[in-house]
Amino acid sequence: MKSMKRITLLLFAAAMTLPLVATRSVAQLPETPLLNLEGKIALGEVKGRIDHMALDPLRSRLFVAELENNSLGVVDLMARKVIHIIAGLTEPQGVGYEPSTDTLYVANGGDGSVRLYRGADYAETGRIDLGDDADNIRIDPTTKRVLIGYGRGGIATIDPATRTKIADFPLPVHPEGFQLDRSNNQIIVNVPRARAIAVLDSGSGQPKALWRVKESGANFPMALDEDAQRVLVAFRTPGRLAAFSARDGESVASVELCGDADDLFVDAKRGRVYVSCGEGFIDVFDARAGDYRRLARVPTVRGARTSYFVPSVDRLFLAVRAASLEPAAVWVYRPAP
Image (tube, rainbow, N blue to C red; front, side):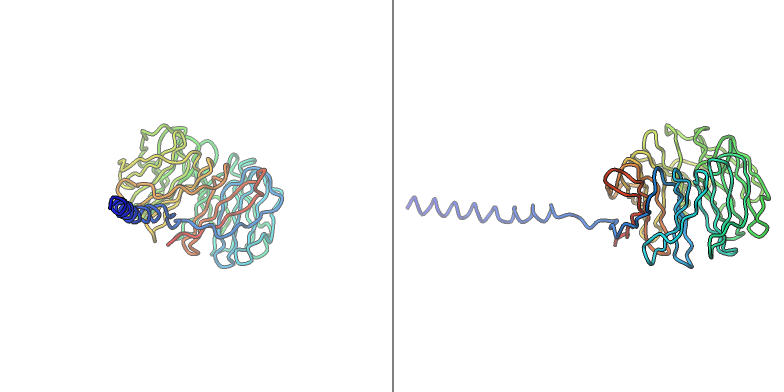
């Protein structure tokens, strides 16, 4: 009798344990990744740091500034391979493609020049010398004008029709990432050496405001969330993602971020923010949450800090420099769902 009771108790205990085991197994199943690595496009014999990227949407070609290689790679996204290399550059940093004139602009940090190339065959068609440290490029889709940060403190405006510099907007120090805020007719610029964000009138270039930031500094990448009317800024020391009102610079949120951030994008379709960091991660944040909580930290490769999100093709491109275990390549991520 006692043996039967003992067996019954053991069977009961085992039955009670089964649901717990099943529940634990389900809980440990990996979540659906928010960024799926779709493929890797080899860049060939490219050494050193890689900087910014741009897209020719008509031809589906991605331009990659191979800074320390003094070259620019042209990647055919349909064929997933490099089809052309522009050599003889001097530390290319910023890249921009202006479709109305079918012109590729490459900003060189080494000699301060901006080189112009024909989109059809990449023949050089012009050169504009800004003098020092030509850097980030933005193209106004309304006016078609090309804006380039450079030097000890300025943004040059280039007329694509005449291919000449038509204006200079002064800044207190060298500009890093900047955005064209068309809703408020202003240009918002990271000026890390001033520990601030500068705001210029987009028409005259005159200063409108200088937002002092409480974060430690090194505010390099910037993105604009047009729907929420917020300016998103990534700080490197320490790593923080901060959100500000686009209207008055009021601080909205500040959250921890992976280290050595260099690019920052808003995925308006999904209400997400992507930040690529040289520490070896892509951080994904919830743009719809008031506190910008982090949704995922995607491991990449140390030193791969430059990225480019293109909503029209719904892909995030990550520039990966050559390392002992990884050749230089562009990693292609597909956001999900």
